[in-house]
Amino acid sequence: MLRAFETFSLSSGLKMNNGKSNFYTNGISEAIVSSIESASGMKRGGIPFRYLGVKIVPKRLGILDCQSLVDKVTARINSLGTKHLSYAGRITLIKSVLSNLHNYWARIFILPKAVLNQIDALCRAFLWHGQENKETLALVSWKQVCKPRRKGGLGHKNLQLWNIALMGKYVWWIEKKTDHLWVKWVHSVYIKHSDWIDYEPSISTSWSWRRICAVKNQLKPWMFEEQWRQSHCDYTVKMGYTWLADDCDDVRWHHWTRNRIIVPKHAFFIWLVAHKRILTQDRLMKMMIAVRNRCLLCDTEEESIEHLFFQCSYSQRCLGLLEDWLQISIPKNGIINWWIRLRERSLLKKQVVAAAVAHLMYLIWYVRNRCRLLYGLPFPVVLIKQVKECLLMNLRGRNLVIGTTVTREWLTSVCPNCI
Ligand SMILES: [Zn+2]
Image (cartoon, rainbow, N blue to C red; front, side, top):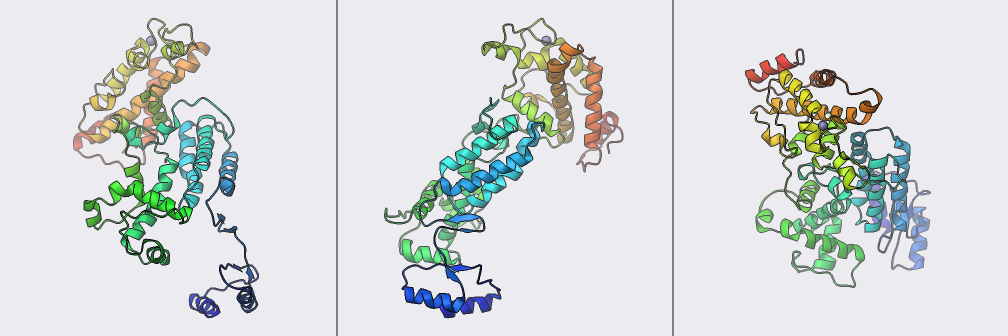
């Protein structure tokens, strides 16, 4: 063992600080342990211990073992701590900053469900309230938020499925018999001459090994399909997650919210609208919060999403001005199928129109909530001026794929100097 240690140190060229390093043993006598200590200058370590911030335990990973992960997520939310950030800004932070903390652990362990639920609760409170410790009304269920964007979600990962997809790489390594020491050990100790597809672990094996076998069984219908096995594709976590999360049909409006020209704040708003989750008067009355359901803009008809954005006299005047400016007919009913009904061959033109309509809907909602009571409704031309200025600013400096000359001429006429 000592010779092996010396060989490793020399061949790897590593300079180890023996005073800060430990070694771990199992099943050897105290005399040998003492000789290792005196020869290496290191002390024998005990289990559990921390390695690169992660707690290494010999048994099943418990909730208390993962407390430092939950604490880190809480601390990060407190450091981000802004209640004034928009929903779109918060979901971006959740996807980029908070998910990475979980990712680091989830690549190594199958995390307990209770811990994943705790992290979900922290992220959910941050999205809807901007803080980690507030129980607040969620406009859309967390399950829906965690769906892929084409399925009507916001693309935040379902932590349990992502954890399984990450563990799937170990299942793949075992299947492909890759050149990892751990894979060789698993084959020689556990699997031996069995077929990995049908292998079932005995109850006496370790908890972590049984969880890896459970992940294998979960991924089995896809990963061990004959066609997939014969292909020369390598497993990626993204592929595994896409298969696991594919539990419903695509929604027809996802292209609208995924439009790259649209401002994220407006995209989030129309995502809420598409789910019919904004608090219009008809909905408030059903919830017994409002006593009347008249439209707050025209005060003549029932206020529903369809009425507010497409059928209200105020909105129709705004849409008329938008049509004159963009030289296009805008469908005025059916929020869900709006994108499909927008007849236009050029994708860029469709995206520009959709971004303008989304901004207009955002402004209609804004004036409905804020301006009506304080200052009265602004003239529709004021709203369209804001949409124009925002779109022009958003298009400038972008590397647009314009396509045909007709589209170029149209874009030059509606947004001068944007290309
Ligand atoms: Zn109205």
